[in-house]
Length: 123
Image (tube, rainbow, N blue to C red):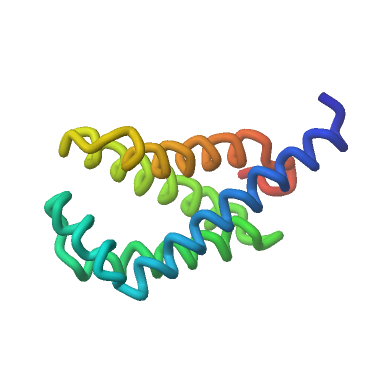
């Protein structure tokens, strides 16, 4: 893969990841009734939505920022833990694949974006 293709692919997946994280963060911060019901079904308190929403927004800022390489690594790690934890929680709760898929998609986007990140965005 050429450097140009790798860079384009990185930004495609990173922007898609960022859009997914921002949109889910907004829904979580709004505490829509469906989200509150979902998080409670998984066994988590409602205030967890606020925590996740804020962390996701801060993570997106870190991932998109051209500086703060160590902070960027922490953001990717946070996305990985949050999305793998969400997928695991849905699996343990025996939810349908449709409930698990969004977490798995964001998890895959996190790993692809992290793997393809340019040298100036690595530790």
